[in-house]
Every structure is written in structure tokens, then in C-alpha cells.
Length: 504
Image (cartoon, rainbow, N blue to C red; front, side, top):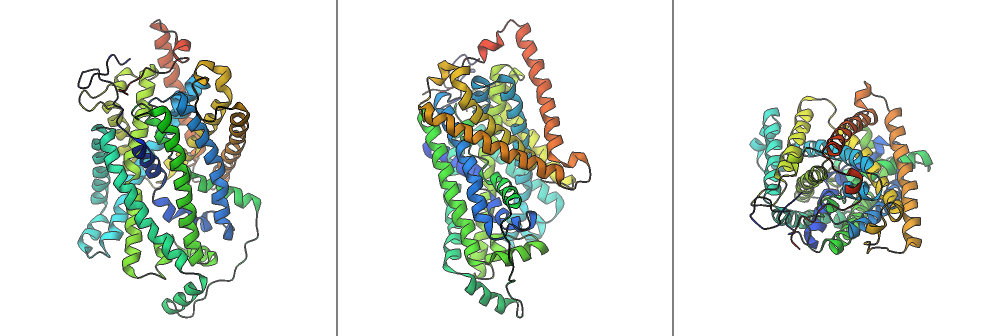
């Protein structure tokens, strides 16, 4: 374990340098990616028949997400340590479940980081061309250049992470502000225009084409499937918990930042998607989605001047880029927490003597993300890792709610440290509802994956996720056997919090 917290010493602990705003930015930037520009509209093709019920499905998806966030806030107030969800589940529920669930989360996030990195160059291309740089746009379409740019973005943010959470904070806060400003263009423009304006603009751009008059009656199965897809938009706030060992006034700021991030992001989602559907009829969105990929800039481009459309694309690019710093932070802190506990090779728990960051864990996670980038470049199914992430995060969120239920019985000493929603009369019903709703979404997600056509079993996220869990199981029991052989009482270790690794 960490022997010292003296700055600059070889064994210096993690530095508590991240403030409330930095934690909020970490959560918000990890949640709001470029997907908000695509998923609520492409949903008309991926879930045919959702029609005018997109916003209602968004709201439904937000309910279990908020219950999971509440569980995170409760647990963070009692266990403010690096590794967040792993520490919560291993101390409050079951050490094995905590490890294998967080391992699948780590794997899915690493692959998702690779996907995000690989998708950045096409967004830059779509900004460069209209901005008057056709040569740059053409170069970004060239395979080797695209691969190189993706790797540069990833490893640049790896460098930012190694330099410390202070550097991450200084990177994320401006990106968050810029993202909200550029996203605000969509919100203002979408509510300025209505369907009548859109019909007039369509008649000018495409004479003879009319907005289709289509009905989409409510269908519960379709609605729940859409809610499951939209739930993926709320993944990311848990990155706040992973920074628990590096936050100032962590017991207060972690729960507060989680609440602010989830509420702010939810409001942005509803305003953003609502603005586009306020201006563009859902039937037109559905018709376009059946023909090709649709995005918010492409839909509002019928109404806006090219300069404003370019600004929206730039906003989407910023949203995509700001995913990376917080996600790299999250995956590396999971690895660090495992190694600190002794259920992963101890070398991964090394802390940089100058920057006081888990640099080995950061680099190791980045290597896995690099594999994700290479997979995107050479494979045909780029988003399998994202599907694995959705499955693993649903499991993780469900476990967080279950941990809130089990904590007073499993670990009353830690339960006594809870400062958020202390009344069990509120804690238990809300966490129980979270288990039910998240379990239902998980069941729908698995059913959707199993029922969908696929070329082979390894193109389905569920069996691949189970395979990842099997690898995690092997690692856990091997490392735990080593602990036991060395004379460590593993059960006693998992009853106590990891040592405090920061300077208050």
C-alpha cells in the first residue's frame, strides 16, 4: 500500500487536486458526446415505429439513470476513493462481483475510447471542408492519416492524464463551456422554427417533396427498446466516482458533482433533442433515417445558414473530443484500485513520483484503447465495444443500487459513514426501484442483442461480454489465491476501505 503522501517522494500518494467544477466537467464531458447529435434521430431507423415518442423514451431512460446516480452519490459519500464503483461493490456487496463487473466496464470503456478516437477525424473533416481547408479534409479521409490522427488524440490526452487531475480539470472545463455554447445554437434555433417553417424550407430546397404524413401508434415493446438505446446517453457520470481519490472535500463534492452533472446533462439532452423535433417533423426524420445516417446539423441545415450549420458540426466535434480525458481517467483508476487491493498485478498501482498519478495504469489502459482504435481501422464492426459497454454499465448501475440495499448488513461500519440520503425509509425503496428498472432495461438490452441478426456469435455483445467476465473471473481468483498464499486475510481486506491516497 501507499507508504507516504509526501509530494515528490517515490511513494507519494494520489494528489487531491480536483475541485467541484472539475468533477462536474468530468461527468458532463463523459456523458455528452457526439451521440446526442445522432442517436435521438437515428433512433427512427434503429427502433422503427418510435415516431413521436422519442422525448418520452428519453425521459423514461433518465429515471433509472437518476436512481443509479443517487446510489452512486450515497456510496461516494461513505467511500471517497479512487476506483469508485469497484470499491463500492467490493466493500458493500461482494468482492468478486465488484471486480468482474468493473473489469467488464474497464474493457468496454477502453474499446469505447478507441471508437471515439477513431471517429474524431471524420468530424474534423466535416469542419475543415466547409471552413475552407479542402486539402486537410481530403487528407483526413485517407486511411493512414485518419489512424494517425486518432492515435495522436488518444495519446495526447494520456499525457494530460499523466500530468495530473489538475491538468485534466484545466482541459475539461473550457471544453465543457464551449460544448454548451455551440450546443446552445441548436437549442435556440430549433425552438425558433417550427414544422411550418420546415415545410416551407423543404419546398425551396427540394421542390415537389412534402413532409410525409405518417402515424406511429404507441407500442410498449418499441418504446422500451428505444428507452434502452437512449439509456446509453446517460453513461459517463460514474467517471466522477473513479476520481474519488483525487477530489478535494471528496465526501461532499463527489455526491454533489454527480447530482449536478446528471441533472445538467439531462436538461441539455431534453432541450437539444426537443429543439430538433420542434423544428423538424418526426416523420421527415424517420424517412431520412431510412435512407441514410441523419444528424442534427443535417436536419437543421434545411433551416439554417451554412455558417450556423458549421458551428453545430464544430460543437459535435468538441463533444466528441471532450469524451477522452475523463474516460482515460476513469479506466486507469479502476486498474489502480484493483492493484491497490491485490487482485491485479501490484505494479499497476505505481504512482508517478512527480505528478502523483497512476501512470502505469494510465498507459496500460491506453494500450487497450489503442487496440480498440486498430480494431476500428481493420474490422468491420466498430461499435461492438460500445454495446459491451452498455451491457457492463447496466450491470454496474444495478450493482450500485444493490449495494445500497446490502451495505447496512454487509458492512455496517461503512454504512454509518453515509451522509447522503441517510434515511433507510428513502434509501431502500429508491435503490430497490433502481434494481427493478435497471434489471428490466438489462433484460430488454440482452433480448435485443440476442434477437438481432448477426453474422456470427462474436458479433453479439452478450456472449463477448460473458467471455470478458470469464477472463475477469480467472484473473480475480488467481490473484486472490496469491493473496491468501502470502498470508493476507482477503475477507478482512475487503471489509476495510483502501488507504487514503491523497493529501486533504
